[in-house]
Image (tube, rainbow, N blue to C red; front, top):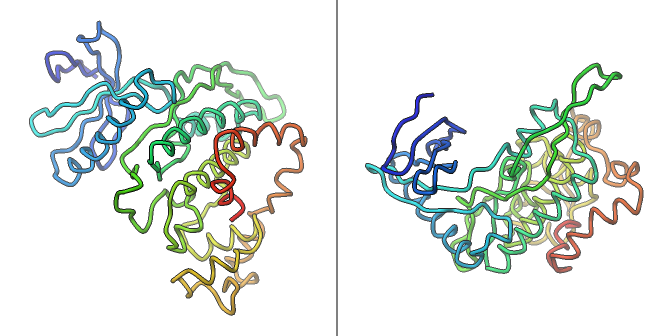
Length: 318
């Protein structure tokens, strides 16, 4: 792609990604001595511009509270308006943890890699929570490697080349849906596969919904596939029960979504085609964890106990 001058200081090099909001491009920032940055360019559409203003508000709060960028949230450098397009400049990062896995035939990360990424994600999310923010859209696509360079080795058994990322340093990105405690809380938040049960049941949500998402992310890193692969609420709840056990009666009593329940239990036919799908594709948690030595499992869970309260962690077990 030919370089295009966006402003007196930014020179576009290539497109990193596109979405409904606009696009993200890699730029040379001559104001910063020719360093490479990521520039998010928002479409000149009012609803996207308003969303960008809200994101900028969050990013400015993060920068104010973490001027040295110690807490592993992506760093915003600046923002400006270019002919009606709001533009936000960020530190340039590498592939997302999802894209790396996708390009590696969904090969799971090693336990030590998962542990290191878990520690960093927990640092970032605890920082957000301490500043009365809930991210609400944590997922592997929103966890980016600082550098996604890799080494390769040949797997003779599977007859394929496999990549191993050299450095598992990561940053949490995309604060477009982040919500302050005092702000209006949308009824539904989070990308489907990482959505907490209290969100599905419309019981109200707060910071613990992020903790649930982190748990889903870490299992995806370790297993190589999405834990809750569904697009239907009832099926999603059935998967949760299959993996973690019955939904607590207190949640069933409080929810307005009584259509999903019958006589205090999930209204779910285990002998239907959907029921068989869930039974065959979802293993109870205790089964999925049997091949992890207890000491390794404990070390994987340590970041949760270090950074979150028992009340926060209660969401992981419903």
